Amino acid sequence: MGTYAITGSASGMGYHTAQKLRARGHTVIGVDLHDAEVIADLSTPRGRQTAADEVLAAAGGVLDGAVLAAGLGPGAGNRLIAEVNFLGVVEPLTAWRPALAAADRAKVVVLASNSTTTVPAVPRRTVDALLAQDTDRAVRSIRLLGSNGSALMYSASKTAVSRWVRRQAVTPAWAGAGIRLNALAPGAIMTPLLETQLASPR
Image (tube, rainbow, N blue to C red; front, side):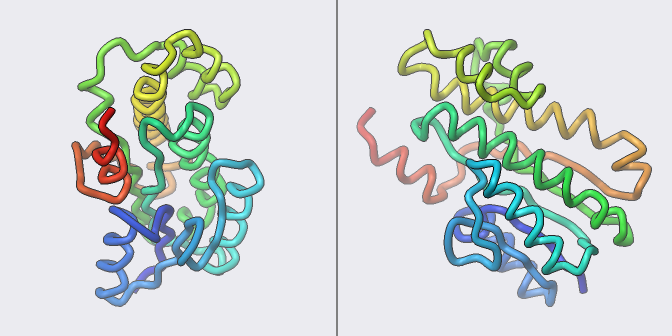
């Protein structure tokens, strides 16, 4: 049996993934704002560092896999979306990479979104700013878009994280170390996040 880290483990797809892994006898180290083994706020640098450090400590330096499912949708605020959906994936994963490499054929799944191909006119400058890990520049890049900015930031964050995965997956640090790194791009899934959005008349 293996040890897996799951962000967003308290609800939605992260919760159900954690339940399935536990049912099969695996150890799950959940990361969330509540009801998790590691309580951390991925929207802040300190929270992301806490998630990275406490997962590594709980895993004893070896992780058989990880599922990065924590995320925020349109309406959460542009900076929060950028911080959680992009940096909340990239920073913990980068910190966990040595522990994943220490396992035998570790597996990582990042939850992206089909909005990467279905939302038009996502600003390239926003995606590029996120890939540069410059959330200030990413937020500035869409400030003139008003109420449309939130949906575009969401799509930009998922596009950026998908591109990050694609670029990293084939490198010696990941594939060369035996780590399978993939992104899934689901469509609309009836999670608490989506239910909250659908409850709004807007």
